[in-house]
Image (tube, rainbow, N blue to C red):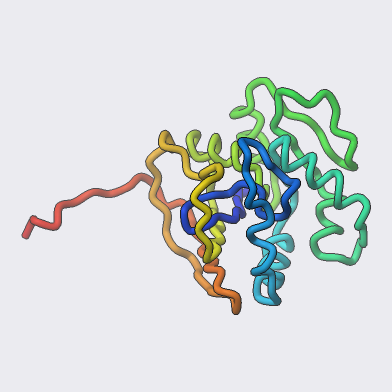
Length: 204
């Protein structure tokens, strides 16, 4: 399976609490819910396209807890997002949770890199990561991300947790697709293409 990350960021790289004020107010963050005003038909259509490719999910603890508190109570087997989140396998990368009670959930710990590699080796289309900022940072450091759907929202916050780690593994990506929603969200899909190449503009 290909490991695909779908993540929301502000123009200054903040990923913290895009969906609501209570998602993650840690460190005094007061801007929770910054992505909500930009939800439109274009945005919804793209998210449905993404979930349509999922065969399994890999989630960090915080995102898992947020999803598990919401989606089982808003279940509709025919819904392209709820139906998949509630029924497909969910793998939770955590060292702090003792149990994962949401349907078809299991905890992975110990050698997380080996566990993720084993999941990627299974037959299927996409192992999808949504939210899970700390997990995404770790995956980027380990070079495990195959596809990155980066949704850039036209807002600056100044404070909050930044997505890209300073110790990410140097990796080149190729732009596979780009679109802009009617509310101004730039959706860029990147495929990993190998190691970065370097040059010098001063060379002939």
